[in-house]
Length: 196
Image 1 (cartoon, rainbow, N blue to C red):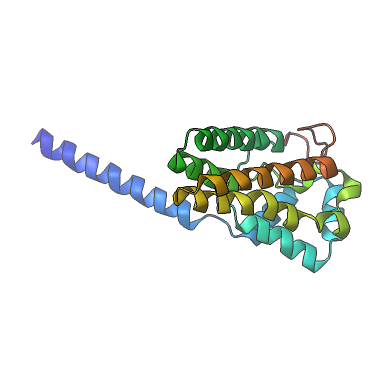
Image 2 (image 1 turned 180 degrees about the vertical axis):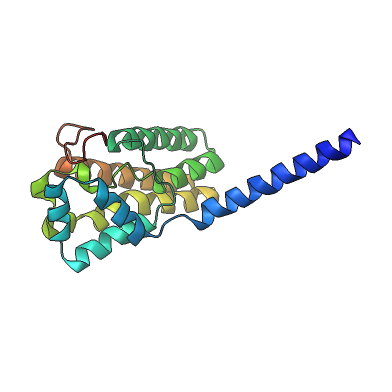
């Protein structure tokens, strides 16, 4: 009798876990909902700057957000960049050792890196939150994440020479973004108190 009760308890626990897992997936907010949640975290001056962006720029940023399934309410942009660097190094090591599977997996992780706490806007300076500066994000995103996806495809096919070429494209995109936007890495004063 005890084993039947134990099995029933395990079955109920498993069913509950599956429902929670499904609920978590179903409740993942769409990019517009994510943007609204992020805006609540912003200090008024950042919120005002974001609201002044053109509909086209906002659409481009939402499109970038929609390409990512991994979002964090804890990690900073600097921490995300550490993860990106680790993935980049894993790609390079896998290419050097002719391990296409590992290269493709690391490249896909890099392309789908986490979106940091508060999204992207808090990690730019206020004067960079304008249509012109934000307008370069899709190109930089294509250089880094788009090249990572192409690298994964090449590595899946065993074409490590092409994969190595995309590695250079990823780094070029990273460097261009850093030169344009990075001040003191990993710091922001654009989140409400308690958000940092």
